Length: 320
Image 1 (cartoon, rainbow, N blue to C red):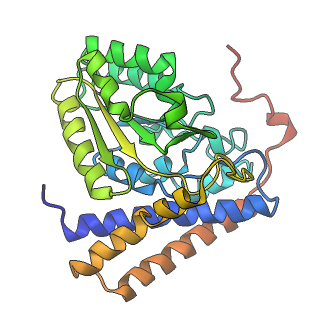
Image 2: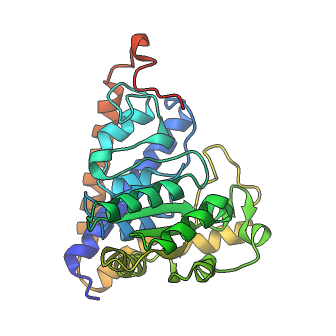
């Protein structure tokens, strides 16, 4: 598959945007300016970027509690996202959802989700709707390694396989389910092996290589659009931060962290861009600077936005 200069630079811009948004969220949370919890995606940017580069606005995604990267890669608006983190009335959920529950139905973003494994049946349902309506749209479910142990994972893959639904399950295997290493919570090394139990394709890729992710996702999404059913992609990656902001990560070995930091997806892509002469160091610095300005503008928008009014506390709130 040919990866053009424009596409690689597009990947870079998206990954840098995710990284800078996350770094700013980290800074603001530490300063006590963001209410609630924040779970950061730093280190996993290549997965959301590579997958979503194959999607359009008519396609659907479901996200996780670590969802900022998925939202940005799918086209989420930075100012509305930041306002939601601040709990402001201008945020995506009018300040009621916070970091873990941002959605934008117009962009096919069916929501980040604080419940582990909850996105899998939602994506399966969205894919069922796509097939029922005879649309060529697809649904992509981002989930973690821990979520692949949940019953929702197995039920969703089974149903999607039986009905040949246009859905792609993307497992972001960052090696830890909260603080538990993968080797202590499952008896397989490659989560993609579980696809065989449902008679669907499963593949493991380097989740810190955006091109590898893009190519694997392109194949699976094309397969889904053609009506050939679901796939499982496992992206081996690494969250450089703790499970949540404030987590000291004492369960990680320092040498393990150091090894993975050497595989940081953004410097890897920078090196490729420079080697191919698709960009100069000055070009990349310019992208970094322009992105930082966009993030600052989003913060300013959020800080200048009104708080939700007490009268609206029960509006848009549904009870099951």
